[in-house]
Image (cartoon, rainbow, N blue to C red):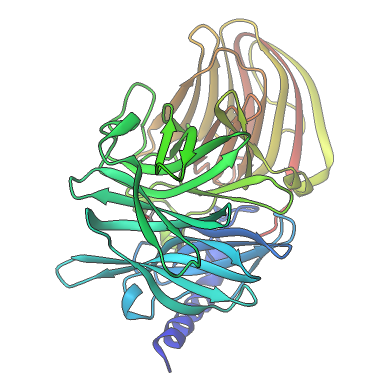
Length: 483
Ligand code: FRU
């Protein structure tokens, strides 16, 4: 048996061994992508190819922790129902021995080409990094072509996560990097044939330019046009907390500006975090066949108490966010759950016209483990307004302080912890609860909060409180279980 076959067989045996136990976990999600067993992290190779959505993912099948990653694979026709496919890549070859790390996919003359990082570590922990190519006719089985890029001069071996796209007949690749001066950076390459790549230079970071000193490593870069601007998304490591910003262990965000292929520059404005919540990292986007810019992200953050999640002892860990559509409004990214997610709604809709006056209330028919709750025409007339979920998560808007807060009971020590953002007015909320996750789209996706939280499995209460007076119109749907 080849090493690839051995690894595949071992991974499928793990699924067989633990699937039942995993499925019994009350914190298993109903409609978010998860690993069958083991750990999932970054979305990879996200593409709409020949009418099918393909989402690959960083996968450690052998335990609920990190290690030599595989590429797991899901496909979908409708962004709601997903099929788990054969393993796409196993870390079988010398150039990827310690992991087929993150990367991306493109169509190349009718074939599906994936670019990923071959991660290699020796006994002393010294790293080597290779940007590799694998190709496929059917989108399921891949032929490895091996490394197409070796580490260029000027960088450490923290050099990974190639994202490739085609622009005016040329192929470009951005890679997440650390310079020899230990500054986070985005490196740019170009190619005519996707095999021979030329290193053009650094387009963001490196301790210079508009970002200045901005952390020691950038992971998972992504560059794309949105409206008539260019957007560079990346996940910087090493930023210090600053007021309400940069509260997680590592960040994920974007800059907007103009990408110049001739000058090898990206002239841009401020860096903004994509998500204000606790659990969001390594987002990846693609343009689908309907022209939408769609994003998935990993609903966790590396090194952020990962082993304390209660699902670890059930042999699984982490999940993806919902797929979100990106638009650009006044230079800022707005995120909305893709329209197709309406197909998750059960037929019955619960609707209420609510006026709360210094009270805490449950609303008839409004509870559940897997629900969508929409609030429109919210009018916090005075004081603060809060919604509590299963006694373990809470949203609060303070009109006086103009601050929106998401609180959760920490899965590490049970103490309430919070993330916040400045918000002049609260008008609109779209909330997705899925057993142990919550995604909150504030004011039609201007701000988003994403978090894992672990309510008592028997508590699916939702309670609304106004310290003074708050009015709103509310709709609630139970959402179907697709996993
Ligand atoms: C981001 C990341 C990537 C790397 C992958 C390994 O979460 O660290 O930089 O390619 O995960 O699983």
